[in-house]
Length: 482
Image 1 (cartoon, rainbow, N blue to C red):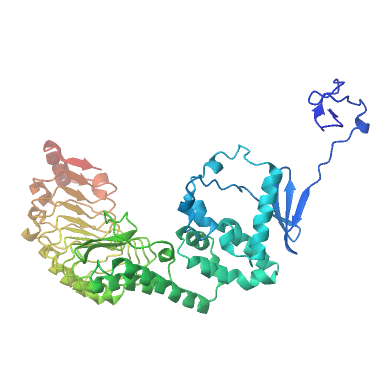
Image 2 (image 1 turned 180 degrees about the vertical axis):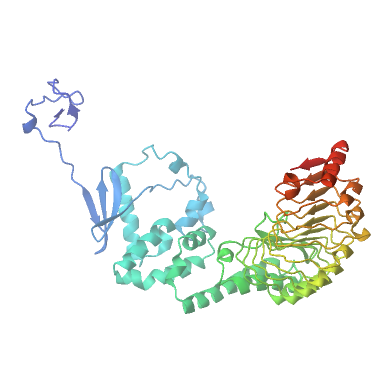
């Protein structure tokens, strides 16, 4: 290939003239050198230099390549400048844009040199203003400021932590999320973190009360704030997310509440990293639904028993060792989910929950149940799978509302004989238990539709009585899963 001495275009060796500019081409390759374009360079200070390399602006820190700049242009539509009157940083401006420039990044809106000098101007303004991170987008400002701090820039070292605090306190959710996700709080010691959390809570409290002071009961409002305050140091979720009213509360909703008049009726703190529930939770006297799933709770306060209007309580996926005796005070409770904890024994007070319809205790370490569990006369669903139960209490007519009984994945070798009392039972799960025989009383369960006995000895070595049960169930179209 030959290079045109005029424009530098590569031409085939058979060309006499450059196909682009028409200049006559010399045929000796040794005599023709590619035109070397001078790399433009701009020094911001002793630590930062920008270079234009192959049409791209590259930031160098102490002569080492740091980052290639991506975009410069901010397209604010003509006539809509008023929308930007209240912006406090480049991040605020970025959030208002539709990002069409990024989507069309292959289009060249600016000449590389113009874009280069634009980046130089931005970085120079940033440096001259003592690395004020509001002047650059956070995903450039903070990594660059951190790098400058690490290499010993005195100005950077002086403002690094101050800038983190300032931007965290600015109220910009996107910036807070960025700083927390990138672990910038790790640069603070324990005393600094404690002071920082105090400032954060003051800000959270002020904003929350300003927003809901005329809407929510004072005790309810303070109870929510206590949950945040007592957990703020252990989880950063409240630094990037606000608790607000939502349309639906369930275990899928991470954070929110529903209220009527001035009282909170439903509350959810799911996947928030909670380690503690404050005693003041008991002040939510009108609460009907409480979701605290997928947290780090290992205990509950006694005041949980003060929530006498509670109808649903979901504590699944925590580290609860026990359930407080005061649970028995929740006389209106209809559903209790405590799946996937490490509970070994349930308190006898749970038998007071006469309105309880669903009790789900999957994936715990239960070694026994309260002997008089039959007294829970409204129970329709009892889920006990994946525990350590070796026996199940004798049954009585009080259990006639039970429709689903899941005893799978335990250590049961013997079942109670009096299953005839479970007149409403539709599904019985016995999978993965060392059960050697089935009680004949199962034949009296006229409502039974499904019997699950996968991976049990009765499947591999059924006796005559078990065979009779199987045959009778087949005639009645009962599904036997084995």
